[in-house]
Image 1 (spheres, each protein chain N blue to C red):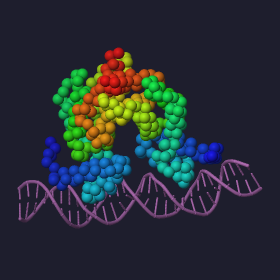
Image 2 (cartoon, rainbow over the protein chains, first blue to last red):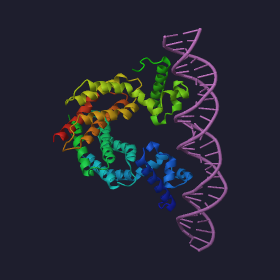
Image 3 (cartoon, chains in turn orange, red, purple, green):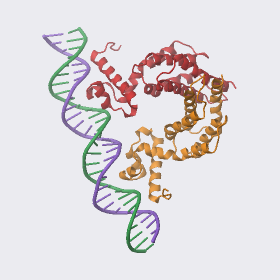
Image 4 (cartoon, chains in turn blue, orange, yellow, purple):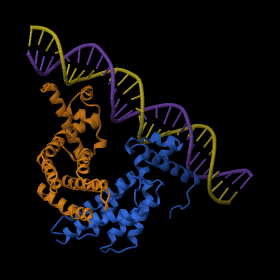
Length: 182
Length: 182
DNA sequence: ATGTTTCTGAACACTGTGTTCGTTTACTTA
DNA sequence: TAAGTAAACGAACACAGTGTTCAGAAACAT
């Protein structure tokens, strides 16, 4: 069994680094943020950074953890039916909105959410369909969802999570249900 | 008037560099391809590279030029009607398929096509709509298109351009027309 | 054949990465 | 609260990649 309580310093350092990265991502694109930038902003020694994370990417990934946990929670507490894709998307919109101002950024979502959603959707879709390849359908649905999420965050949450979910469903459901049962 | 005929050496060098980059992109992700990799593959001196292009990004952009020209051609020779989004997408699928094995890669499309398509679509869409923000609609349509294009190329063109366009239309049209005239 | 343009290749300064290690600081718990 | 442990610090280092410069060689147009 793993040690549950971390040293305060560890907690503190990791949070400083995550916050620093998230701040910097809002100021310039992720690719242009250097490890040097992050440790300067966080006021943390260079060697300390590398004691906690292999690289910038892993630091970013660690910040995605809370949202990933929410995602897993949702999945474990629900069986699949026709409504569940829209319930899942609503949950995602709401979780993102709830932590607005927290350290989850668009970069986190764009880099890590796709994989989780795709895996889930592929496994809950019929394996074969004469009208469209199921992997294409799954890819389309997830990409559309992330496209809407991207617009929403890029434009600084111009409407509610519920409204966004409505848009998502109105745009995507007609085409997908039509092509699946054509 | 600009000089029309370029020195053979210039033509040769630029093409070597474009081809080298496109080859390398197929072997590893664009971000991990270095200028060093490119000039080694192209057998071109370091200073020659920088005599032609400011950086890797500009070399990539130069490779997108032919597709961009096709795009502009299409636009100049057509007025807008209800069919034109699907005609445009069909043209794009066909152009990409035609140059399969050429030097336009998925990276080119993902990095440069979005902007062009979005500008075009936004200007040919009603400015106001009570059901959905027009910019969201445009963003969704373009993102979906690029999502399908991405799947198509990633999976090495598993079906025809015409078939892809059919999928695109079947998936996207029902939702968009429904939400616009609801 | 000549004058011009381009390519070459080596050198250089610079920025960023990731590691190492001896020292200092802060935390835990007995 | 003192002692022992764990973490943070920071300076140094090797390395990889960027972008520039310039003198000389090669290829080009006419």
